[in-house]
Length: 363
Image (cartoon, rainbow, N blue to C red; front, side, top):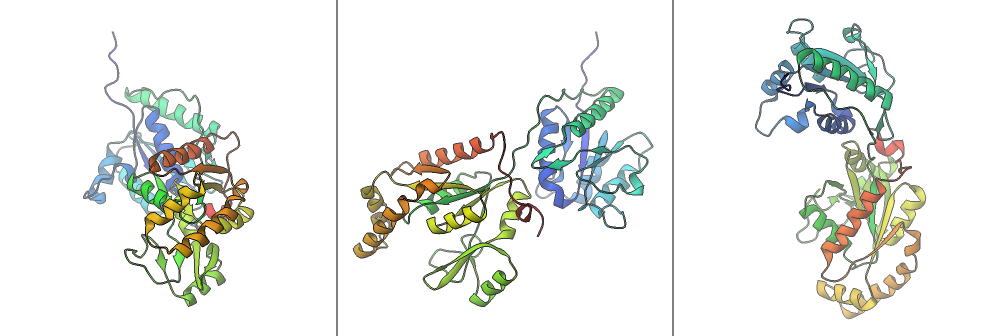
């Protein structure tokens, strides 16, 4: 009787910082395939010394997958220094001790240092890897497992990677948009939250970067001139907008991006960016919205009447949105669950939404 392998195959994922989103997805796939994958942002713990832990992880690995892209090598063909560092350690061991598998994430040159190894085209596009390249990678890792007597990776069955989404939470003033976003943060949901840029002065309890990015009107004007804003608007003499780079920051690490906008701004954004998912938040009745507004204790009766009148007009435009969610008083978590179900359903689309390249590539 042959004993089962005592351990899984150990694989070190060697990549540039700019390719983190794709590599994190592959990391999860390899783990699901029964492979002991090592990725610095997943396995390097707070307080650990990377100059000690990374060499130790490389030396204990059975294979190193070196991910190549236009972002990880220079025009001269040299590999980015982080990858170079790991390869230096791997080459300290005798030939054949560690498998080196160059994997191209896109069309790019293979540096001469890696030219003696056969590479695989694991092209990453539209949130998905090349199925043929993935099959070849798993086949190579399976052969390596057999050679050293480790667990054999499972067969590939289905590989579909969800793409990050831009989720816009909108609705009339007072329906609880900001409260919903706050609850998302409190629950630690894995979203990337946008802090709007504004020229107004901070209000009591607001902090820089966490709630808003406070700036001057001159600097805001420069942001417009440099095309750094996805959208912007004038609010009672002050300007407020959304930085494109903030969206890129979330998308590039594979997270859904949450943006909170008023109804008019959300509609304008949808015309400009139809790939965004717009969720309209409303209340069951005007009386319920009045109760929401009164609970804030920040509005006079005249101000409440003005907001109710505006809400009537905005509710007539809810059909311009992708989804409508009723936020019942006292049932915030139920509303939040409805939003997360919408996001989950969007990830199951046969033809997923695809954000334009200016929001997915480094700016």
